[in-house]
Image 1 (cartoon, rainbow, N blue to C red):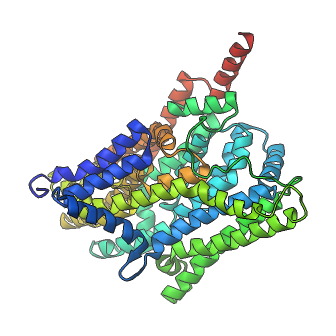
Image 2 (tube, rainbow, N blue to C red):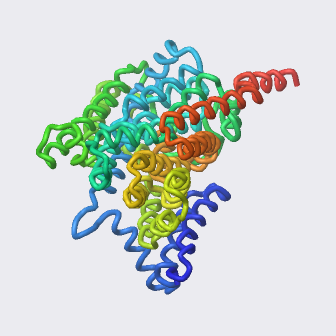
Length: 534
């Protein structure tokens, strides 16, 4: 059936995405997508459908006769982060750090700069970035009445878009591994690092997305649903809507030690970062047998490194919990157990969403959604130069539909490289590869079934669908600017000119937003003044 109607492979992701946006129930929507994909693969056989759904679930935990450590370790780390946050809060570290930061970070703009800077500094891995930056920044952004949606946007836009531009990151190592045979088959004489940097220069979306974060913060250029979230956060003092389900939300009934000490937050998160970096180096050297940075990142086991960091951070958090609360009468014998339970419970929505997103991704891969979109690229009769903006759009559609940028890299990079090598146009190779990378990040950045989208919302403590809906206008601005840049690149063969045009269009859009709409702080002040007079 699918061979005669391959477009049906798009149905499951479309169902999941549309339902998520319409109903705002992510798990229900992902579950519907899982069932739809299994039904299509099983040719609507109900028993076979049930078997496929069960297998897609079981393979997250057990595969090839052993534990599927990649997925299991990520889930364990996510739960551990919730427990760490619970004990840090109970030991008084969260409040103490927020009070300390508010004394030094005087403005809302300054509060947004914190996650933006941390997002660039912690570039080694997007998963770690998404979870850690949001957790560290949340006390400060909450104090300055910055919405969780804005925090999630900043975190998401400085995780994958930064990691994909950095050669010395888990993304860089993976991409260079794919690029090496493609470049070797061309007339170019470049190392894998040189090829990566050349493609990164043509990754207009990632550059635009990272720059846009700073423009939005500096010029207070909020638009669409983000204005609503920011206005409510300022006027009501709530970082998210009342009754909204957000991952990472801890019970307000947990006792908090006073006076707290900011080191009770700083030390556990420093331990977390040190543990992850140590784990990356250790697993990379153990597997690759080399101390070369690129070899380490190519061989490292990031999920295992997350476990190392999570364990170290948890030990530090528990140390301060016992140090500050043992003699405190507010902490009964069962409070320690409550900390574990509340921490795990706070992350269960994220765990459920991740499991369903991974199930859907595996079934979509078996269904052949990515292959169908890849074949559209191969079947195009356009000249090679004009394929550059086309592959950007198709890579974005693939990543949006499948929820994975890495899967899109693995499928489309060889296809795009093969097309350029076949027509003997080596000057177009790096721009074409850069457009694939850009499109895959753009699609992943905007997809509600993407694991990085889910983890960014989890780290920030934001509702996943609220994060997606509020981020989409900014993805549209960065993506639209990138398309204009790729059109200029296709017309002129000049990478630098396309990049300049991309950034000029981006800046023009931000200027237009500010010209049309006043800063949300001023609007919120007018709302509060009107309410006071009434």
